[in-house]
Amino acid sequence: MRSKTMAGPPRTVSRRSFLAGAAGVLAAVPLAGCATPGGGGGRTQITFYEQKQEVIAYFDELLRQFEREQPHIRVVHDSTTAIAPQFVRSEPGDVGCFNDNLELARYISRGQMSDLSQLPSAATVRTDISDLTDQYATYAGRTSVLPYSLAAAGVIYNKAIFAEHDLPVPTTWTEFVDVCTALQKAGVTPIYATDRDTWTLWQGLFDYSVGSLVDPGEFFGRMKELGTDVGPDSDVSFAKTLAVPMERAKTISSFFNPDHAVRGYADGNLAFGQGKAAMYLQGPWALSQIAMVDEDLEVGTFALPVSDDPDERQARVNIDLCLYIPVDTAHREEAVELVEFLMRPEILNAYNADNLAYSTLTDGPAQQDERLAGLQQYVDSAAFYQGAGTFVPTSIPLGNYLQEAIRSGNFEAMLDQLDADWRRLASREATV
Image (cartoon, rainbow, N blue to C red):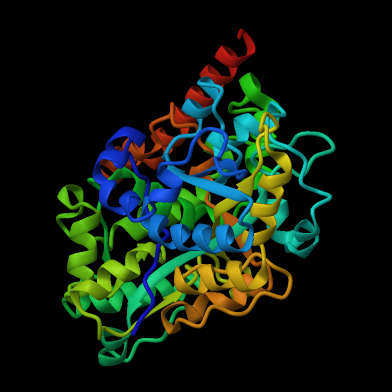
């Protein structure tokens, strides 16, 4: 039986609507839900904020195990998709378990997260993974988060279709284009795209096209330094630095399904599960949805090659979950106990194995799911990058720009617009 992935696309569920919808789940853990502010019975009550709605039940079991091992602590398990409301209400909880992104970065850069560098578990994290967190933000002298789960993404492909047409898994850009061309000539949709959900465009087409040609962390670090000086004459810019990657993106989009503009993420999972396309630019979160359509469908994943040097192939990754302790916690000792429990290798590794992600620990085991075997080598050798789209602030509508670029074929105009938006945003921030 295949394990189910818990990583997934962006969510918009509010805390209030979640609590209303998850009453049944929370009712199963009355001790946490009914705890008094002081914990009651000599127990200290702490709050664990966890972002991923789809792993609520999984973490509930872990928290109950923790309570049995540490009977002096009671844990309230709360869930929210946004970090800001916690801090605005001055209720950041005692331990957070969130996706590492620009939202979390704001609070790291403001020094609102405790230093975790002295925790025993901090020394067990792979430095090449912990270094990824610094690409978004740092606070001098602190290790603000501990990476918990690494998700790796690539091109999901239908093994039967590839075998039927005697096609190899491409290792170079030329081979990839040849595979797509051969499929198209045979009447097979090479790539299923879902433009209606814009996040699928920047997560797939944009990120994959950029990542193996440009170092996103380094590029956006330089862009942040330049700020309002980004433009035609600057050392780096969207228009200059991403010109070749967007040429690749334009070519890739020519192999999309004809109705890509009106198809959404759910449509893509269904269509790919039904064998209606050979490839799908999605992450591991899509695999469980595809398996619901056809659990026997043989699929694999490979890193999209965007150059003709096979050694330049890399996988897109993101730190799907990381742990932090807010500075303002009133229960740091208990919070540390919970973090150390969750960071135990047998706990952390089991979570990642079950959720189609990769361990962040130095001696972490390989992901055993055969559908992800093609990405293991890139995780092992740190041949990976964080998606370029994750560095673009949400106030810049990257997904909408990609929609227009695909329709018009004018990716150059999109890059010029991104440069203009970047300057405008930098100017606004400079006056705050």
